[in-house]
Length: 69
Image (cartoon, rainbow, N blue to C red):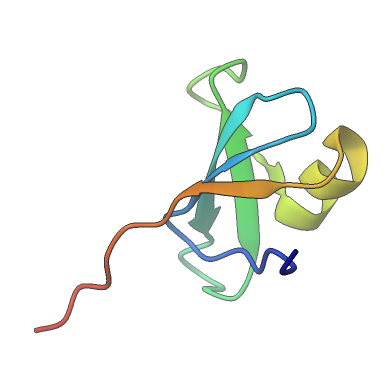
């Protein structure tokens, strides 16, 4: 099974089948974070590596098509 490499815009599931949205920091686009529906709207999420460490391996649910101009 291939290893999941997160990208901003991905929807992923954790070991408990919870859905997470992966996003990048505007100031540091290489810093990826995850947030799910259990967070309050004002929260900033957690680093995606911490999400994977705390809630088990992440698996890709959906990756949006690349946008080219």
